[in-house]
Image 1: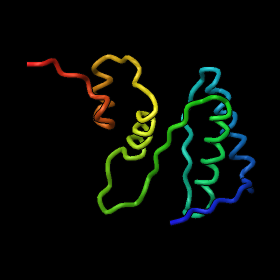
Image 2 (image 1 turned 90 degrees about the horizontal axis):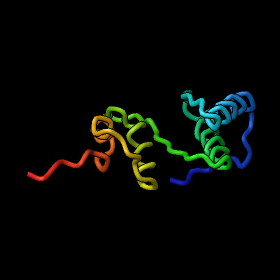
Image 3 (image 1 turned 135 degrees about the vertical axis):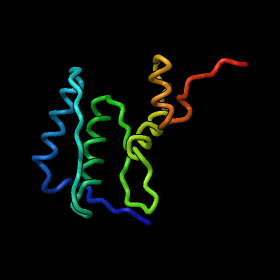
Length: 117
């Protein structure tokens, strides 16, 4: 399937401005969560790509996951997909085993190493 996106973001000035404020705050150490929701076909993917490009332009690391309708839904799929995309390009920072165990449920490569028997 070929995905065609308009080269210009149209009609999303307010939404883009809000997310740019969140990106700039994150650069200053004040992170937050922004959730993009809406009906199919209203431009969510196009807005997400614009925001990701701006974040990369600010030198930020970007990871993304997608929610999809499915007959067999997977718990935390968007979060797991985002973390797995991050894991492909970056090593996990040093974390206590409890954190590694929790994250390892979503990204198997991050499970804590078990001592040899």
